Length: 413
Ligand code: NAP
Image 1 (cartoon, rainbow, N blue to C red):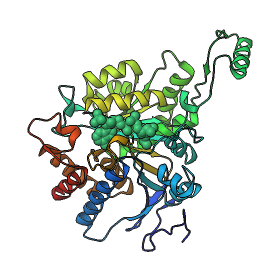
Image 2: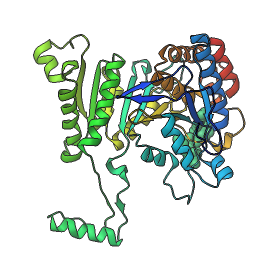
Image 3: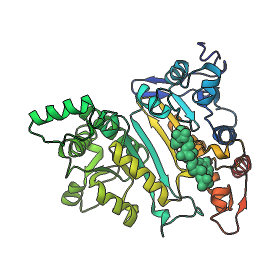
Image 4: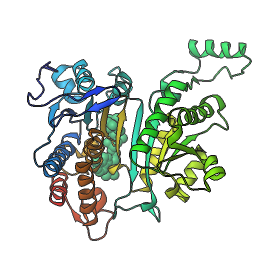
């Protein structure tokens, strides 16, 4: 087998194959992992322990994961003099899956961020963030249990595309002059950013959200946008979203209007309701009527804000999992940073990476093992056996180290 970063993938593992739009997952898939910087090694150790135990317990040895370490961040810089070696990208592309701890953003390393670079190079166009509450986790809202949503945030376009010119620069001046030709007046001392939103980018994102909703039996997909103001970008996102639903998922979706006009307000069996909400109203809705929302498909900037806002509602970022997904390829990751002050202390909460592992098991189609980890984690928290971040907010809780929390979850599997 090919070598990556001077190492050979486990010989007894097999590659995941993507054929005709479907994943073919062997019983022992090779899964590249990036340990991550700072607290990365601590939370990765606990995560691997829990995932391996869950797979072994669930499938009695018939399935297992052949882990394969690949490098990015500080460890890659130390070993290979490269923050993001080409072989790491090649391995993720080849094996179609990866899981990673947080990475330090190199200062002056030629990258805006390693995470952004990974997303762009591998065309991981959907940032997926499930948000739900686990019993016992301290939350600032009265009914956190009503939050159970999955955000699909477009990852490649919008004002995040990186097309931005500093005020006074030659580019900004030329762009402002060109806009003047189009009849658009922009103050000469402006910085200028461009917000591209394409039919291609929108449709593939909304398609993924709809596929997820249908596969997971979710009730609705909400297109969140600011189309009342930005008609040809955010508004077009909404229109293209409905278009995908109609043209590609016609028999399996129903719009909110049709729901009331034709179905008396109740979705026919097996159909997902497609609706849209203006972004500002949506922030109110998720606070006031969270149980009316399931899957949210949205543009890059809206999705960025909404991911953190929803995570806060269920008790913060420490437990929020995430993935970046393309077609037949996905990288699962802790959503918090490297928290360098806690590095190597076996102290922090591994919940975010463990739950990202849960997402990965589901992506592999190993739903039973995924459910088992999620239940065990939930059980452990409800037993008030938690790391410092939750312990300081919970009365009568037992303080555990990262590794001890991992063991407690394994016990509860
Ligand atoms: P951070 O690493 O997320 O840490 C900020 C604070 O969040 C920590 O001090 C801690 O709060 C809490 N926290 C984070 N992870 C936790 C965990 N697993 N368990 C418990 N508490 C946790 O943010 P940062 O300090 O702004 O960023 C540090 C580095 O990470 C930077 O280089 C940044 O670029 C990078 N980063 C990477 C990613 C990524 O790879 N996905 C994401 C964000 C940032 P308390 O001290 O209050 O307990």
